[in-house]
Image (cartoon, rainbow, N blue to C red):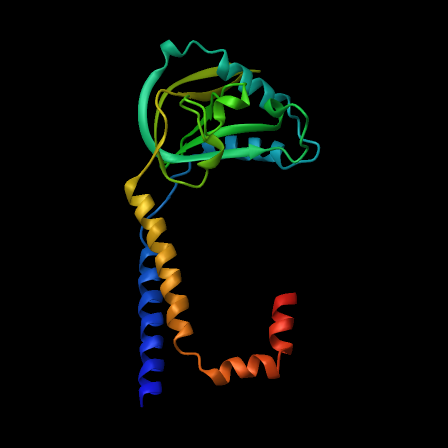
Amino acid sequence: MLKMNRTCSGRSVAVLVAGLMVLFLSLPGNVYAETDTNEALYKQLSGIAFSAEGDLALFEELNKTARDQDWTAGTETQFVGNLRILKSVQAPADENRARVYLLRKLSGELYILSVPADPAARSEASDSFYAGLDGIPGSKMVFNVKSLSADINGTTYPLAAFTAKPTQMKLDKIFKICIILMLFFVMVGMGMTLTFKDFTLVFTKPRGIILGEIL
């Protein structure tokens, strides 16, 4: 009876936590209201990054143009969004030709981020607004920037530069912690349903486990 109760309890915990996990994942998140212009820009830049023969001259020109702007004339704005880094598969020696940084609003608007040429400005130890920049892609952040537009070869590109260090939203931090905890409790709940007979089966018939590891 005790064994049965423990098994049922473990399964109940696993089902309950899995249900909560599905509920969290179904909440509205990064829903992008894509516009044709933003989508075309992203496809253009990602096409260059992921092509072995992509023309990296545009990456170099975008980075140089963004750094050379008079940002005192930019428009200050704050928004919630994500950082995306497009890295070229060609991996040239010059890092400034190998990647471009994009800021993306939750509404879908894109900006080419002006990033210092010196990689040290992006290190964790730096005291600049760009410290730890390469570690924040994938997180929902609050960005304070100045934005403006610049013309390159007849095409207008939206540019942005940080006026403050990006900060992660508290709700996003809580959400990630909850996901980790829920996964932990799902694993514990599943583990509570195991018996010594299950472990014995693994050692007496290991073919399934070995095949699973290989796959």
